[in-house]
Length: 109
Image (cartoon, rainbow, N blue to C red; front, side, top):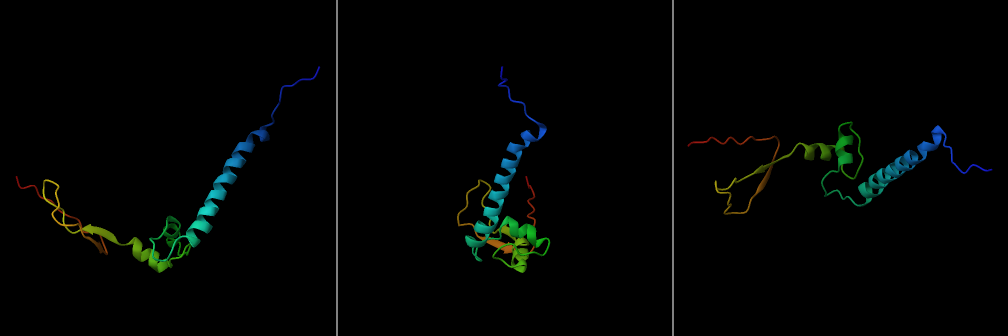
């Protein structure tokens, strides 16, 4: 009589792991080469790939390393914080500064 029970070896269980890793590598390569170089213009913000590469002085996108580093070091400052009740009477303006400027609020009760 023929046994219909399957017996797997240890290496047979690596099939799903290989497929998932190949899928992840494919998605990473597509997002890096196609999206990062063809769909990101030099006027857009630097991507995560570019920020990571700028730490190692590499260019991995449409922006130069100098541009990525200079954009990384800018901080946003809100020009008006509004009334205590949370309402703002004029549109908010965003000002970019070279360094963070802490805002100190003192409770004068």
